[in-house]
Length: 393
Image (tube, rainbow, N blue to C red; front, side):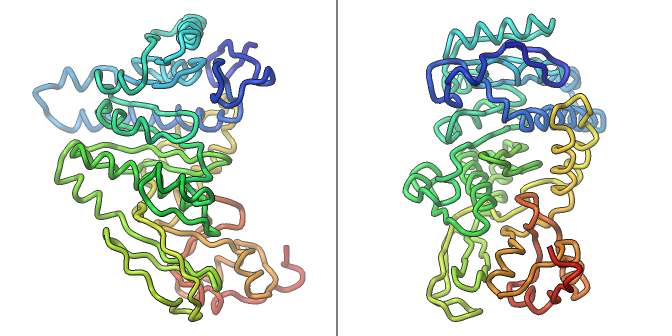
């Protein structure tokens, strides 16, 4: 079937024909990932502008190299739609796949749009260990971790990673999460943020083994996947500093109190300091630092255009990410109110009450009732006001 996304048209298998999200042998096209691809294009455009501006401000002997087109690897290209859209955004594209049918389809789709680019048949790990690209996009079925070391080795500047195995990431499939991400994940009421920070933390540790530091400049958990864009610095001292963002989260399963601790050794409380419960879980090491650069997020938002199929949702997501606090967990207002046996008012009013009490508070992108604050659970309860009947949801 012919599919239009952004400024490109591609031929793609009909997802109704029975292939299963990349798990089978057939080339797979997932229309549910259009938001992911729309946001990727906006990130690529903003990143190219930032790179060009940085090169213009720094005098270097290799100025000609700085002015070249940024290279981009779509490491598991399938139909090549992501690669075609990156080429349309001005990148020097390589579309790779181990499946010869996928390679041929990607090549045809580049030609269909009269776009430059190369399509190659190669195992992703082999290619990323043998060649380097300015930007590497890793979008596998399931966990990206079997490809993480090669991806770091093959990336000069920006590493884009998707993980669709949300159950292991979030601790719902605990043993699988421990095996794949070398951490202790927990299935908490902030499980989507847990998964995103498990992913970034695991990638930070893999990168550090190669003396590479990661800086998340955009990250989000949407629907069935987590996605992060990591700016890389190839310097051992920077990698050391990046590892300082790792640590542990302690969560009370009864009163929902949580706290976090930086470092590589956990010191979990024996009992909850808020309610005295012995049902406190420890998760980590995970990434506790910022998951996005708000200034860069704003520049990405400027690159979202109405010809993108999911531009409205992408714009709303970026607006929320740009204002989101850097706290390593979020709360669900309805979960708290249920815990307290209290009615839930509008989230905007709820957050205003927190701000009036002197705390920082912002919506979180994980859901319409999720928020972040520097107040602890008891302070949130004290600051929240009963909702008048006319204001209840």
